[in-house]
Length: 186
Image (cartoon, rainbow, N blue to C red):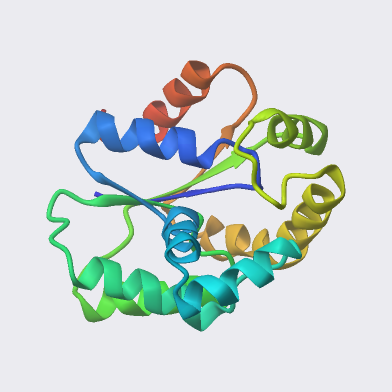
């Protein structure tokens, strides 16, 4: 089972991806976590990423695609995985589809979480992770970047037969139940 969980900052992608991964016994792959680890380790990629995300912008497509390809190529994910935070651009989505095709694989589900901007801003301000980009001004910048650069990924997958829109408002458990109802296996 290969799944992408998608949505704007604060939609609950990480929380829901973790729950789906645990429910199905698959791996949760978070590009955000991968990048935070690179930042904490002080790698060259980490330094580049830190300067970019501190401004509320997206990491270059090729760096993200290379990191995802390396991760899924160097590990055995025979039961599958759920990607959280990737792809963030149509170019990344196309590159990922090409990667899967070369591997003789395909994506099983694209889950898109939706919630109003006001709720997303409040969630991000209150989540307490202490991220340098969790100020109201930077959150608004991130939401604008999402709408301009990332939301088109939704359109890319919308007519693929694997797209599922999920209401991302309500309790964590309510959202999780909506996601489970969208998946072909429960």
